[in-house]
Length: 488
Image (cartoon, rainbow, N blue to C red; front, side, top):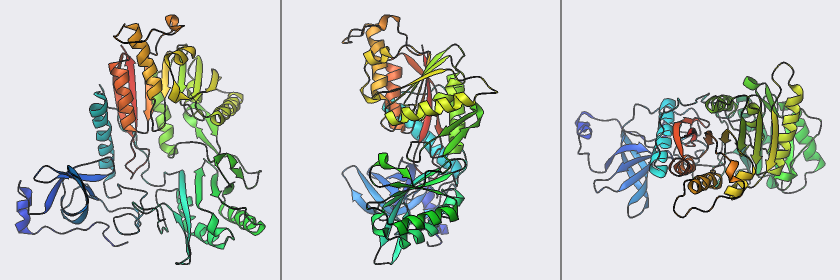
């Protein structure tokens, strides 16, 4: 990579005109940053320009990449005045140059400014999409800026013309695999594996039929899942075992879909992560969904439960419960917990983890009665919602699609109760059912959170009493967040 990943030009004394409203011809003043980490500027005619690599308050020259009637995308020619928040990227593969890694988008922006941008994205989405303003902004949850990514999907490509194997993320805006020697967002011990992995794959008989390695790190174990499109030879199995022994990792093999993943050798230590605030240990398989950033996850779970403020006499439902990341901590506080998840395989894992932690509860309160069910949460209705019984409090942690069906069912029940025009009759059993008094919603997509928040506030009878961002993915444009809804 060149010394400067973005083109810059020093201002001369006569360029003071740039400080005034009138800019030299062709220059643009960057006003803000969008969710894709592009600088946003306006031409004199009002046309919006999205600029890769530009930061708010900078003065830049650009060239067009894509033009539409009301907006265009542009690339940087030069930065004439840099933002005070611009920093030197921490990775040699970051930038706008050909072959740059596309895994991160914000390494050129100071970490504090990254957090501020993401908080603003959350607030803007809540207002513009949901017409909701939180009564209180929560302090952002932050953690280590580097070495945080304990889950990753690394692409593998044998490039015959170059006589090499590439292992890493895709290039910026490309399907090609970046030529990466280092990745500082991976844990240091995994970063150190990138070049040895390239050498290993190059030595395999199956090097042309291994397109992917999935990484999953627990507190003590690092697992690598090798996707292979053809059976592996005995020699290749031996090479994988030698690599595992030499580098302290486990190999898992995936010949077809995710349900075919099995360990290369069955006697390895299981993957697991701890939630020490609650005395919980969570075993998992390398393809199970777990949070990418374990440092943030511990704080996230603790804050979510603190905001939910569960009392010992209360019943709680954890929707989209996954492995039980929130469910088992909730079971240390509530009278009764119900965990609902769309994947039957994850529900089975929940039962196993509950039994494991219940048996290990010696010097702390025993886990509350907890039940797990598998259900399609994207097809919820008022009837199915009522059938699950009333709960004092809810916790929601949906995927990027959000919890629209669930929230809409709750809103429909409220609209029926108040006799709103066009509302459907209440389903059977609704007479004794009461909505939760408080909801904590953990989101990985501010747009779907805002949509669901609009329903909760405007149709279901809730106030948005607090909201804040969670910097689960430093240096990327991904926005994780949390919101609290109180009834009445």
